Image 1 (tube, rainbow, N blue to C red):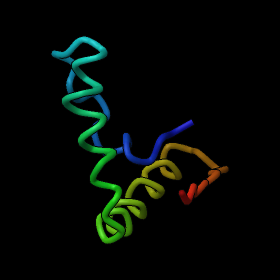
Image 2 (image 1 turned 45 degrees about the vertical axis):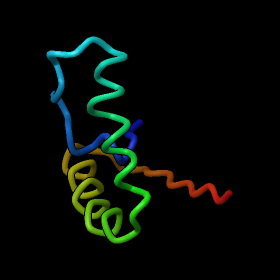
Image 3 (image 1 turned 60 degrees about the horizontal axis):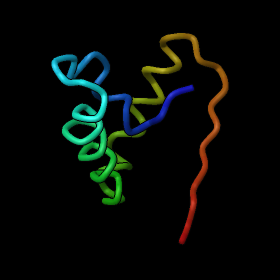
Image 4 (image 1 turned 60 degrees about the vertical axis):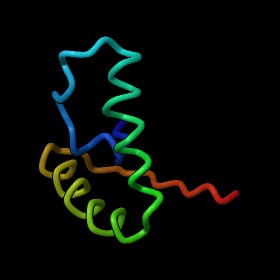
Length: 65
């Protein structure tokens, strides 16, 4: 399973412990996806990368509050 917002930083932040990594790497990256233009720019490359690695089924979910 791949979390799209995590697709861009595989193997990054290895110098951090888990909670530091979440605070310094993961959460700031996920926050960028609040910008629709950013998400539209990033999603195609992440999906292509998943397909290149052999993933053949993707499930996308949108939650509106």
